[in-house]
Length: 279
Image (cartoon, rainbow, N blue to C red; front, side, top):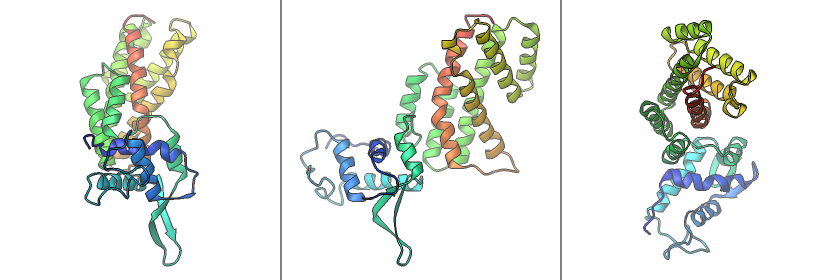
C-alpha cells in the first residue's frame, strides 16, 4: 500500500461516519473501523478484504495503531464514550456511543484543529496572503492543541488574533476622515488597549455601512467576526496567562480555533477595502 494516511486524515474520515450515528446508540468498534477503512481507500488495496477490512490485516500492519490512535483521540475529546458495563463499573471498549458533543462536532463543517495539516491547508485557502507572523502563530496553535497543551494553544491563537486586529486597526486609521475618531483610535493603538481598539473598529464599520459608504457585502458578518477575535484574546489574556485564573478549557480553545480562519479572512477583506476607501 503506497498511501499512508496520517492521524488527521483518519479523523477527518471518521467525522462524517460519526455524524450518521444516533446519539447514545451503541456501535461495535470493529464495524466502525471497517467503515473507516472502506472510506479511506477507494478502491481497497489487494491486501485488504472488502468484507472484513480490519480482520484481513495483521496486527503488525501499520494501519492498526493509526486507527487505534484516531479512535482514542476522539474518546479523549469526549466525542465518543466506550460502553459502561454496570457489573463492576468497567468499560467495554469493543462498543462505543457517540455523545451529543461528538454528534455536533461530526455535523459541523469548520476546519478541525485535531487535523493540523488539514486545518492549515484550509487556513491557507481562506487567507492566501496571511501575514507570516499570523500564520506562524496559527500553525503553532493547532500543533500545541493537538498535543494537548491547551494553555500554549490559547496564547498562540490569541496572539494571532491580536495581530489581525492591529492590521485592521491600522487600515481603519488611515481610512478615517473624522479627526476625532482618528485620534480616539490612534490613542487606543498607542496604549495597546485592545477592547477600545475593537470598539472603535466596530463602531466605525457600523457607521460606514449604515451611511452606505461601505457596501453591505463588505460589512456583512463584521460584528460576529470581531466578537470571535475578542473571545480569542479574552481566553488568552484572562484565562491562559492571568495569574488569578490559569484555567483553560479545551472546548473554549477549540471553539476559538474553529472560528479563527473565517474571522481572519473577514479581517483581510475589510483591510483590503479600507486601504482603497475613506470613511
